[in-house]
Image 1 (spheres, rainbow, N blue to C red):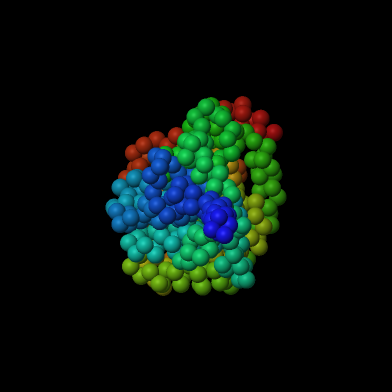
Image 2 (image 1 turned 60 degrees about the vertical axis):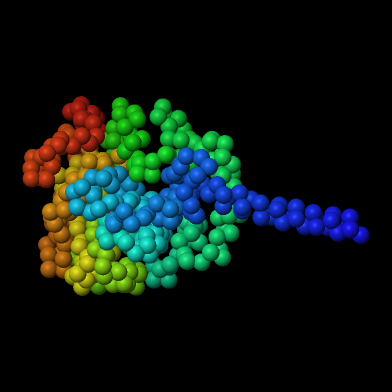
Length: 415
């Protein structure tokens, strides 16, 4: 009988270990550092922002930080040291989530809420991406399947999604063995979402990848791409239909419940934190190929945020999409969204001087200038721009965005 009981005990013990073993292993290794900093192997950080940002907040966002950056891949190239130096903030952490899903605004909000819950964040640099118009009234809290919402709430009872996750178990094994894929320096083709770095300050700074092969980087390729030619063709057709007055008037009636019920509520609930909201300098041709309905929603969104800024003393709202020396120049862009990292540096300096600030009082003038530019826009190539000539009191360096394009290449493209 005793032997039988022993066998039964061993059986249930092994069964319990079989069930809980993987979870205990993940808890010990914790590749995304959700519960603790890495101590078995040197700390490594994943470019999978949706998971890694939760780990950064839990294990690294201590009281030495008083500022965070929230945004999409457009905000990934902010240099956090430069941001802190220019703004006077104590220390800044970048907590970006790329815009690969339509639920990106809701995901930004969850990351921000978790960071603010630490109680010591006094400054937020918050990118207002045009995709914020996509949030429907019945989807205010909807996130994509890619996003581990359970890592951003206060409950521990749904953490089993992480502890019993096959992919996380596999990453834990690779971590133990020292086999995590690191950032390639020789053009290798690892899946970008599987790469790991030993410095979280450099996470997802995609300009690092562009600099690995400067002769064939994204800026060089895009300036010669068929996609850009297609933009030019579409813009020429759209300009005739772009009605500036209609867009200005109808934008007054646009309303986003996401802004009032989620964004503004969060701002109101954190009066001791200053929110610097900004429109990124996405290229003008991105907007120019949109129909009037899309532009009405976009201008309506920006108008609504300007009103939020006027209601709350802890909000400043900046619009950098009227910097036409940049936004009208293809040389600054690697595709229809992403701009050179020096542009990130430049807009922070303008923000620190309180330039390009938008309010309900000046919104119509801002919008009129913006839309009038679209009405007359031509896709153009320029040589490298010296921002010192544009704003000598701000920037003393020559911005090195893109490649010079020869007259022959311009002529070939226009044909």
